[in-house]
Amino acid sequence: MAFGLLNEYLNGQCIDGFRYFGAHFTKIQRKEYVKVPLKKDPTRFKEVASHKTIEGVIFRLYAPLASDVSVIGDFNNRNPTANKMEKIDDAGVFETFIPNLHNYSVYKFHFRNARGEYVDKADPFAFLSEYRPGTCSRLFNYEGFQWHDAPFLKTRTRNFDQPMSIYEMHLGSWKGKVDNRNLSYEEIADYLIPYVKELGYTHVEFMPLCQYPFDGSWGYQATGFFSVDSRYGNPMQLMSLIDRLHQAGIGVILDFAPVHFATDPWALGDFDGSPMYEYGDSHKFSPWGSYQFDLGKDPVRSFLMSAMNFFATYFHVDGIRVDAVSNIVFWDGNKNNGENYGATEFIRRLNGKLHYAHDSLMMIAEDSTDFTGVTRPLEYGGLGFDYKWDLGWMNDTLKYYGLDPIYKKYDHNKLTFSMAYFFSENFMLPLSHDEVVHGKGTIINKMWGDYGNKFALVRNLYAYQYGHPGKKLNFMGNELASWDEWNETKSLPWELKRYPKHDSVSRMIRDLNLIYKAEAAMHFEEHNPAHFNWLMVDNKNDSVFAFERRVGDSHLVFVYNMTPNYYENYDIGVTREGTYKEIFNSDKDVYGGSNAYNGVEVMSYYYGPENKPHKITIKLAPFAACIFKYSHPNK
Image (cartoon, rainbow, N blue to C red; front, side, top):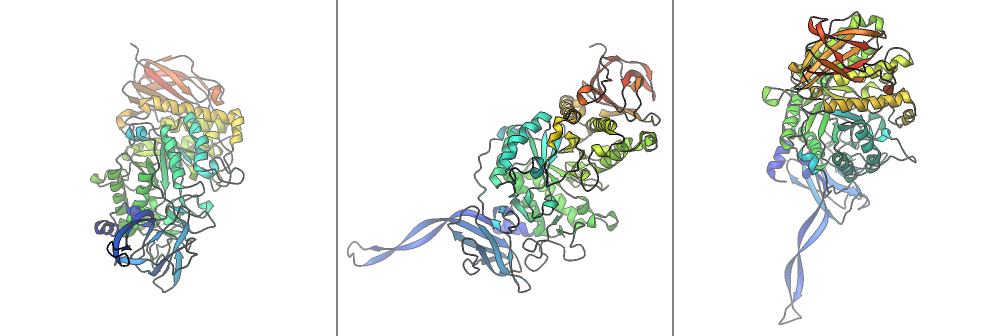
């Protein structure tokens, strides 16, 4: 590593640390001297220099307070005297070359720490790791994969004016185990790709795929931030999955947790006998009991930026969802503790450098705070994310849909408040894994009422999510209207597809995705307030909402009945004279409804509710959600 690059790493400016640290397969030239007989006197010899190419692995470790460092592994019977590492820089970089090694060999670093104790530590930059209960790093040469996704990458954007409907998933529990083993990345691709394409999603978002020991952490408490999760295979198998998704036109977002890491003693914690990666004070532990990264330390910044850049560079991921941003911007996630300026500086560097290196890479914040400027560009003083999860929308919406309709008029603003702040950030609307675990109930379980009402309301909810401005995200199983909470140890309840009520929800989501892609009004310049207009926003007594979205010739009207009341003729105010054709109704029988829909185009008439210049009169079924497409009277 050139001095300049090492200096960048130490100063928190490096995103390429993986190219140097860790264990890399390489070839070196060694000079050897061979005795050659003299022509004039064969009994005498001269030494002639020759160069021999030797294949092996070069190991490099950054551990400033370590001493007496060596590599131990299956290739040297874990003998700490066999392969000593040389300290090659006063900053604390150690190096050694070991010939004739191969993929999957296990290894660790053995050294004396700052307290004089000998410890065995996994490689912080390992590219593959043992599956639990193993704790060793594994050698793996990740170079040389043959990609076939150039056409996809050539047209890739950050999707500001494109539809983006995300299918969030946990790889291990999507299909579950077969013959008591996890399916590989490649095996999952055979099932996942046709399924996602059929439902019309534009992207999949994988919950963290860095190596982690405890299944119940779902990947959010990792031990290997450059290690592809070995539960499902090796790095090239993950590359194959992503390559095939790209060839099918499906983007890939990777969930990444840079806030905290697992406390296992063989991993990053107390690495060289000092808090190299974590805080050394009262902030040492996160709210989840794990070690908390000290994002104010420059080498830690380089470590994490390099990890995310590794997946963007070598795995072609199209977006990175940064977990728990609230615990980055505020000390311990508490606004009352004030801004963590060291951590927000890390986020600005991360977004700036990754966007510079990959101009079409999406950076997404999972943030529950009101911290301003999360998606504002860096040059305007923001944090530089492209999107922010709208967790306020999620909480208000789910609470509203769980209310008895009698009382909804008292919480009317829960459905209107989101548009009061929506244009302040680039928001994404999540119905994620966090909403279907730990006793919270599944999405359909959160709906008010009996069996039939819950299905009607969940259809209304998904239609509302798609109608509301903002990119869409749904966790796997939402499309099945599953009654059982997600459990990482079990497969999704695919048997529900046999029941029309459940299968109809999947069909409806497919149709919503088709409309979402087809209508510019639903995805183009959706953060421009000129394209959104409330049509019925104050009707508390009926709990009926309506709004329009308009971009060019794409002009849609969305109507939502939040009560079990049926209306044969209901007036909705509109802004334009013409005809309105119903292109979607959640009460259609193909979605499991009663089939009370508007089969013919409706004409507008003068003077509508809430001071609108025109109105349309429609049939409105209980808990129905409708979408109407406008046509000019002269067309």
